[in-house]
Length: 419
Image (cartoon, rainbow, N blue to C red; front, side):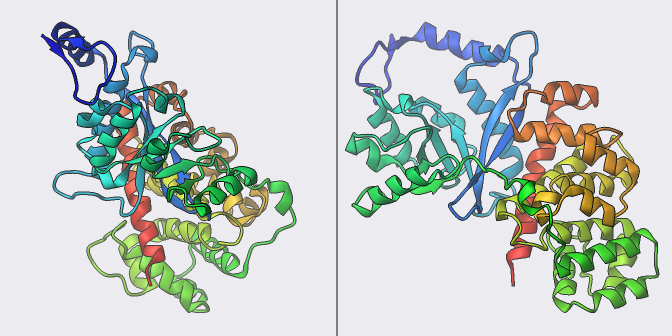
């Protein structure tokens, strides 16, 4: 008996034997791989979500043999385990997850573990060109998923397809493309959310003569005092010169991202509860957020997430005393872009441990490979299998670290944005 999905208007239906064979192949295909992520931004360079993909690990066969349906299901199942667990529900606030798919509603079961209102399905012009595309995309929209056209210079001519779109990929925000899209919407086109999918960092040559801002300088001074192991009363006295900074520090420490179980009400209490090394990491986080004018908002989120991911990757492999160093390595790998100050200038003021500096500058030493692994997963994951194997780390630990860091960065960002 043939099987024909109701949305198909043309083409040969698959036989039951073909469906069984495909299902068997899906079950037998190895599912080991790595989650990769790219930041999706609005036109103000604020993070609206992450575009997630699956890099299959080369286990016996090349990654290309993995079927699209299995790739999507494996990715979604892995993601949902961390960002939408059954007992806690959605943990990413207003953040949206983007997935590249084809115009095929038979993929719908693979998406079930995630709430559709927080998922956008990304399709290229070719994916929307087939005769079945309008009905297939209508089916997905009716189930609550957003739809983004990616890699196109204009909207589809078919009005039915245009009306189904909710998002449009504007690449790096090229002005001519933005102007065309905004003009289209002004003329009564569909209300689309324009998404910047490629963030271009400001060249450091433009800020070579920049200096640290006053708030940044105070944080650096506090970090130096901690490194010299100065008395907590002296550190507290220095911090009292900036009530706003004191408030921000205590708010971070008391946020759900750390949750020590007891509300910390003073710097002295924080040192008692956390110790100098843990306080140093929170000052590093404050330093990364101290000069909002120097970088786009997305860079702060990226640094926070990278710092936490690098830290989590080292859990169970390095000592507890290394955890804060790993966090600082991840954060400070982007500190020049965050502060608009050359890396050498920042590192010259904060005498980090040699092993930390080595990781930041060359990706070497004991910490460097963890940073390199996190960076690979921010790209295409091409080096993820090799780097994790060198660290004797399984793909599951890598994925757990990245997705847990995504949740943690969301919580820290919520604390920073609260009044």
